Length: 164
Image (cartoon, rainbow, N blue to C red; front, top):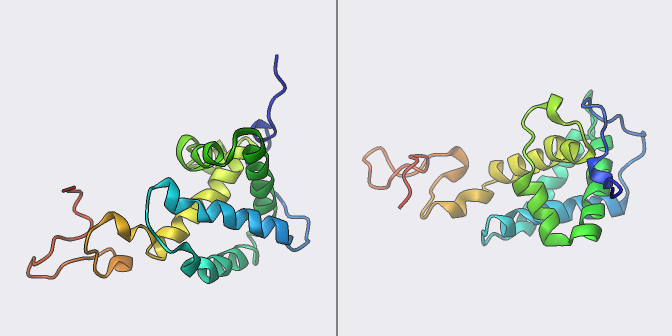
């Protein structure tokens, strides 16, 4: 029987307690590589580097206060690195953003589950909140407010559910 992979290791679904140390340069670079993979995964042409400062603000905010995510960030960086080494970057990204679904904290029972729930899902939310998915909607005006068009229906609203 093959040895279980690191990212499938079972862990408690509670948030990983950070060591108290700041994230290393390697961890930050690895986390950024995970974030940068969002547009190519969804086949978006988006200048992701424009979001770097907002992404850093999110990391800083999530690393302060009562819910310190540094333990989760360290875990996610290790999980992503191990997956890239074992599977290659494309398959690692597909596993993180496509194949793994964790929507409740009690379902985060593996290292990969933690990376998905506590980190990757937040990265996607950050990307959405900063307008990253506006490329899905042609002529998306006022996208970050999730509104489009005008009150006179010159343009279709962004969130109609109708795809043309």
